[in-house]
Amino acid sequence: MGEKSSINLSAPKWVVIQLLEQCNLRCKMCYEWGQEGTYHHKENLSQLDPKVVKRLILDLKDQKPYFGLFGGEPLMYPHIEEVLQLIRDYDCKVDIPTNGTLLEQRAEMLIKTKPTRLWISLDGPEEINDTQRGKGVYEKVTKGIHKLHELREIAQSEYPKIGVTFIVTPTNYQYIEEFFLHSINLNEIDHLSIEFQLFATEEKYQCYKEVMATEFDVTETPCGKGITWDINDFKQIDVPSVVAQITKVKEECEARGIYFIAYPKTITVENLTHFYNGQWDQMKDKRKHCAFPWSYAEVNARGNVTTCHTFYDLTHGNVNEQSILDIWRGESVNRFRKYIKKSLLPICTACSRYYSDPTKK
Ligand SMILES: C[S@@+](CC[C@H](N)C(=O)[O-])C[C@H]1O[C@@H](n2cnc3c(N)ncnc32)[C@H](O)[C@@H]1O
Ligand code: SF4
Image 1 (tube, helix red, strand yellow):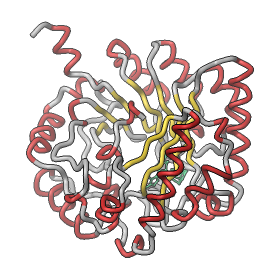
Image 2 (cartoon, protein in one colour):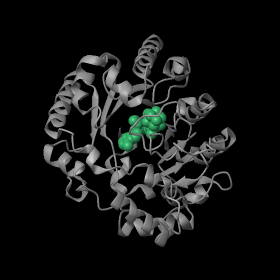
Image 3 (cartoon, helix red, strand yellow):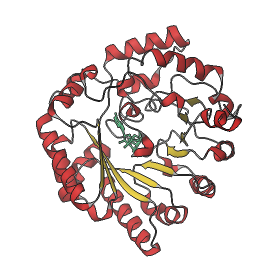
Image 4 (cartoon, protein in one colour):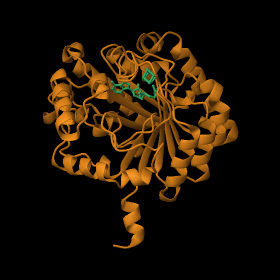
């Protein structure tokens, strides 16, 4: 194998940078900032030094990965403009999931720096969204989308693409159709994603905790804990109604040429019933393996590198001390790859990457 291909194989194709842990909202279902979320009771919050972010991008630029900028709330990061500019200077693609509350303020900057895609979180018509995400949030976000769309038209620019992400929860499951077909202005939306609140059961979490301790010597597992919910919280969800509503939204998207995705992919009563019953092994599209450790890296706000989007409990090195490529090619990631080749972790079904490929969204 030639030198070039071995370098390509040993660099991640997708890299998500958690710029900061801080967030200005406290969404109820959030595994980071919800009532039982990982950061909710944490005293010292972190954000990445912009010099470290710059070095990270420079280290990776020849491989041209698809970047993601994550948080907390990424638009709160004080150096976001420099980071976006640098990524775009190297001609790399970049997606940003955002709660959208700062869109109105940051619209000009986003039109100038042209990230590939924004995924803006909205979880229902005004009253329902604000019950889940906070009072006044719906108005701020929809104003921000409107301004961004208007400026993009004036600039005659294709980017950023405007996507909306909706997370189905016990609070909003009755309002999917009303939201998409009667509340927001679909003329301003290019992409639409309907996803389900992910969760692990306490039993799965305990198994995960044990694997982390025995296989990897990791005894602190706050990220796994952050996504652990009582399965009974989901019992009230009317699955046939959810399926019927999503089907209508999908049809409307097809008619309008809006790119539509849903996770889990197979939206049928049978499949979603398995999901809410915690029978993940009976779901369609279930995975036996996770390929992300071979193609994906995530750097959290403390500089720690993982190959997992949701669980930062197991990390392999720190970009404040070492280059991302050395970490990516190092012994610790290799050991994890060997493990994951044999079996998934007990809570992999609570990770969004289990259901999705971020670059295809
Ligand atoms: C953690 S947030 C970070 C980015 C930004 N603050 C936002 O809200 O979009 C990323 C996405 O995860 C979603 N999310 C939060 N908790 C979730 C859960 N338990 N299951 C699935 N998605 C969740 C959010 O609604 C958002 O769309
Ligand atoms: S805005 Fe995003 S990170 Fe903040 S609490 Fe809501 S879902 Fe979590």
